[in-house]
Length: 296
Image (cartoon, rainbow, N blue to C red; front, side, top):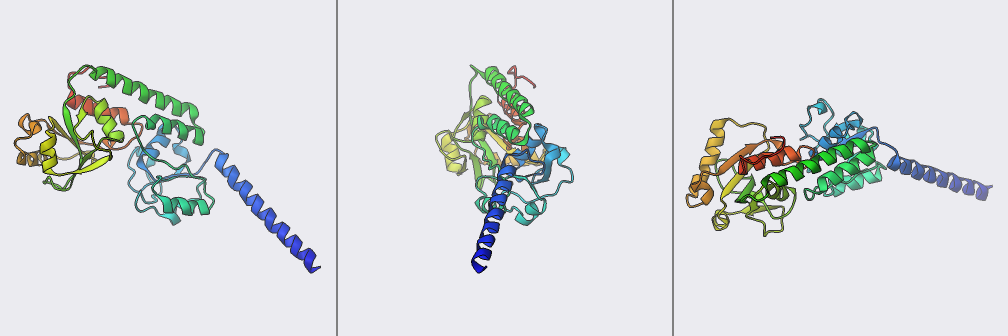
């Protein structure tokens, strides 16, 4: 009897394990109905391809599109709230590939994942199509991706043959100072955006996506144009003027001498998502205001 009971218990446990594995496998392949997105770009993509009604939670720093409204917030890239995510009972979570701890915890919980990473400009349409396939919106996703590809081609044609000014793209620094200044390096989607818009990135020779730059490095690079971006949607004109005046500390810089220090605001400029054509068009208009750009 004891041996028989032990055998039955083992069979029961094995059945439970197999059933759980089948359940998880089905989750991995079925169309998700409860998606949690931790990354702003992914949230934008999901809503752009028609998967918005399937989204039940978004990152704490997501603010576009407005449709995200009162959806629960689950932390961000650095501070994801694992308990909040699991409490939403998701059948798909989209973390960033550097969120290793989050990914491990969700995997142990049996929650299906689509691990995201932004790379080059060309990766954006690819990711959109992949998310469309995973969420059951292939046709919508392909249309969004094709529109982006057509838009990028149009911009490239509009600035073709023009002088590409040597440009420094500043993505962060201390307010009213040139200290702790970070600029787009020679790789990544922001570098690609700048060059497609008709500029020559002065930090093209670096391998990093973002580079901490000293004033000595800036003077040596001698950019003809400086473009600064801020993720806020608007800044008062007086505030922008003060930030531009900071560059007067480098009077020998060609961009300063030619009054080509440009300050742009808006998170579309830093998010590799469906608004990427809009963002590059803004760069291109700054660099080539008379270019026959589409959707200008």
